[in-house]
Picture 1 (tube, rainbow, N blue to C red):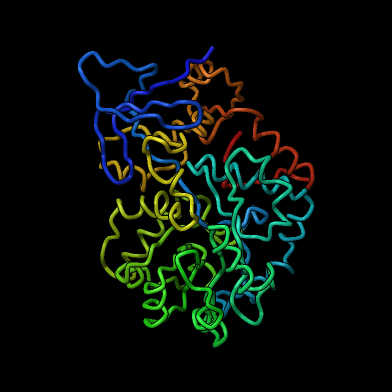
Picture 2 (picture 1 turned 90 degrees about the vertical axis):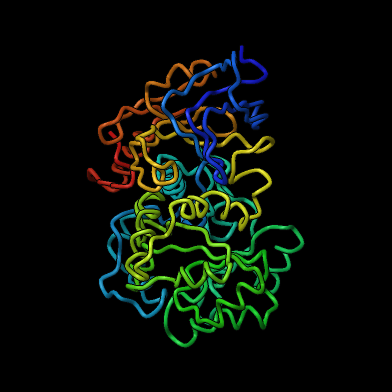
Length: 411
């Protein structure tokens, strides 16, 4: 029988605003009830020796239906997203992906995020597509949002139109999410101008990509408190350019990081953070601080997606979502930015263990959670519920061969 409250004692807690040494975290049901400094005689229910605890990560932009590999694009660099999309939909790999059920792509994308420490994903697609699946996923897929595909004449016409969708966002206090200026033709470059004309640029607006943003666009975004999701890996793959992150950050825009689909983007959020740091240095010969990158995958997307009351930081009253990474005597922010999949040692979701190294099986037993075992690269892992190996077997049966999916390297 589980206690009403359960306390854990990690070595360090990154909130991410502060680095707290020798603190404990106490859970009550699905929430954090307290975070306290260790005092003399302080005891916890479970000691997490040598683990650094962080808020669970938030992937601010993904397309879970596109959770497949390899990447597509034989005519890079592209002029705009539509040229790439045309190549995608005429490619053999797209036809191969279509042999599996949509729900399996959602599971595949959810596991891809989960094993990298992501427990909340913004899946940018119309509700009619993902509504049947998101409540079944092992992680949290954003449910409340309004959207457009892109603000251009050749977008995919998602939703009920920009003006109507933005009004929904204001009424329901939810994000209005759209791609913006994902290309270099004249039409793509007018995205911010169109949003202004439609009175759809404000703190509820979440803009994806923005690789063609001008100085004036950036200033207008900042003045209107709009949010940007930066997907540098996908941008560089498709266009050999990415958003002007330094100028956007210096203007005061709230910037988050997203992976985009693995058919153009990174394998996972960890790779995306590392690439963001690299390309920022390549562009500006300056180092993007690790602490800032960590905020881009925790509190910044929580603010942009209107989730910060519950997620994005470790504080009393918030949902008990957090991840643990084994200490390697590095700065804790650097430790997360440089982490690999094997380094995600423990994941708590809604106040309960969900995934981690096999050495924490006793913690799962304490919470009376059934789990499956598998090997991730060279590390033995456990996960609550069904074994993702069964999903890989199902996909391989559908395509008729031993399909390699590098963003889920398990066996």
